[in-house]
Image 1 (cartoon, one colour):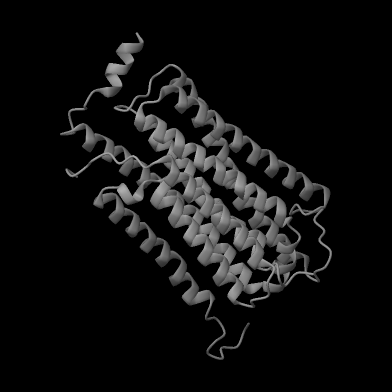
Image 2 (cartoon, each protein chain N blue to C red; image 1 turned 120 degrees about the horizontal axis):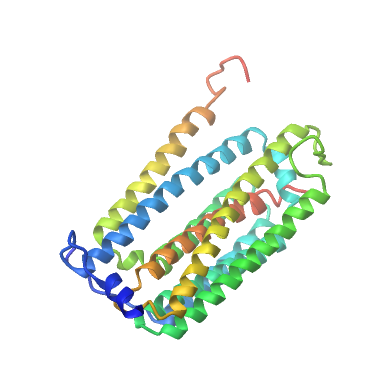
Length: 222
Length: 102
């Protein structure tokens, strides 16, 4: 049964000339999907840029209320998860089946830590009444509107990012189950490779979110 | 797409790239507390682009990718540039020509 599945996944589909071409097509397809993701996150980054120009002062004060040390620590956690993910892909390329499982589990755990820290940060925002809506209150700025706008963008961007993380955690769980069954080998590891691309992409989004939301107005804040 | 050969980077390479990424994270955090005026945005984004390139080229294997993949990625960056730059030609220049209003 298991070998039957294995033979099926290894098979060269008729539309491809070689296995290498089949693999390249999978990689390119994943990149095309990630590009659509770049474009939709790009819209949010653009909205952020425009409003930050319009309401520079309110954005600076609101941005400075975020905890930069938690943000930096979480960045390190996410970068570590990217390292373990790429090591999982490398283990797959080398056909080390046990190492694939362990590196994927580590990636999953680090992803979980990131989401846990994010949940703690969001909870702090609820406690501080920094959630956009009727109960919103932010000290230190004359206009509440622009400050709400900053936190709206903060929640939209970190929220969508976290949603991608949750999907990534789900994909990793599926991979771990399959890897534990010994499904991946040096000659068939496309799912590991493609989920790896997705995971690193989510990392790159955070690489831009961290400085834009937490850092660039830090020197202006109180 | 015929010249494909499988490249497997050493674990050492990945760990070096990871250490660079951590170093850049600490640098960008430290620089944020220095008053560079408008230049702080430039500094933060330059460091972010460096980190993005490290992740894309090494962790996402772009440097070993096919020419087609590289071309598609360059195209994506051009489209993103159009989205941002053309929008900013409006928003960033409003009120410049002495137009009453804002």
